[in-house]
Length: 91
Image (tube, rainbow, N blue to C red; front, side):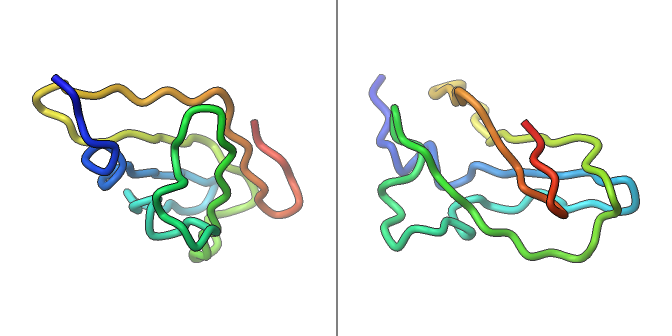
């Protein structure tokens, strides 16, 4: 079964747990730094997101990225993820 790209990316969520707080399930499409939402999550592309949330502490302890797909019609693969937080790059 083919899946439209927008069906898969509309609900990609990210949660971050820091040493002193958390960011709960935000929709990444709402934080893209590009003006063209259709560019995100394309094979071979690099996407940047800017998330301004409350301070979650000095260290990022965990990161979860996923989406709801109860019918298991799609998969999400990332080559790498870099997070710049408080002048530290997490990979």
